[in-house]
Length: 401
Image (tube, rainbow, N blue to C red; front, side, top):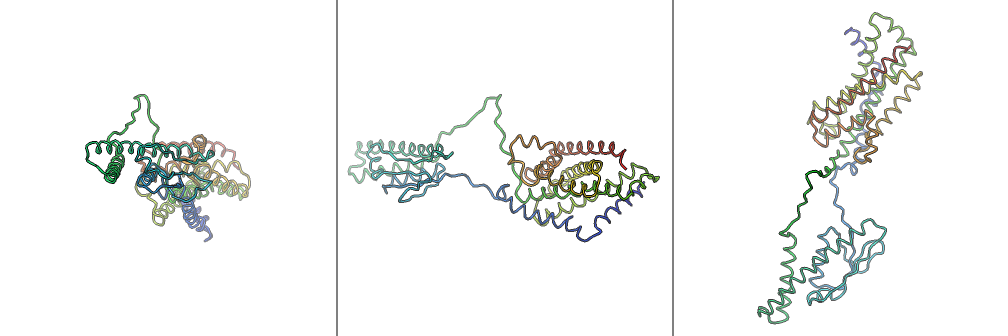
């Protein structure tokens, strides 16, 4: 039996690589697509740290005093990117600081700044709150400085208008600096029965997503190719002859599937190594976990290939179904884009696909440092797919001619 299985494996490898062009589809194209897709997914998947969103605010100021400058600084510290301009654009947020702003604040008079918002913009309310927060902070500091200046004048620490102005500005500057690190902070506590939602899971980088995704895509074509092999054997009549040999139906079918499984595992190994050596993907941190996921995914997919063979009748149908199914499973299972960017409902629906579980496990390994224990649920689901596809395929294979 072992001799028969080894012979089938050798024949399958010879047939797969009978033409040099086979190497292109087996290894070179997957690596080229990995490079191209990785470059395209760089911004989506997080090759670079995302920048914090800061609303753009254009400011037209008629005052050049110290308090106007302090107001601009306060605006910058509340998540606004401030652009001082002679005129305000009509298509963005704008703020007008009137002339005499610093003088009126210093004398304790109320002063009004004008904010021009965009009602159709979702950030309008946030920008308004930012400006109010900066204005409130500045107004409170101005009152403290005014009270301090009045007290110093009453104690005759300052006697001239110049000394009073200088004292006011010094108190204002010190208070402004101190307010950046307030002594009282707020700590939010939830009731024991309430649990805050977990932070969003880390995403794989563009290169990592592409390496895992292209592995899943191209290896599926190889493994689902079991359907093409079985259909070809049936149409050429060799399958019928093999089934009547002493080797038996189980041995023949096992040999065909094992040969295709070995091809898929060899391709996986090459693509994993290529991803690590060429693109710097960190596949080696949990080698046992990576191996378990890969073998489970290969078993599930080759079982699906055998099941597909029992439904198609011609070589053309087999080839079209294999390529079309591989591409569809890859696209829907998150091999071409991160599953993290899809709605929760979509992720639940996509859970019926083995490619989804493979991509989840690979992403956990690459982006979240998953261990063997962490990927075991995905491995179990993939093995479950493999058992289901294989059992149904064997049942249908009883009537396979």
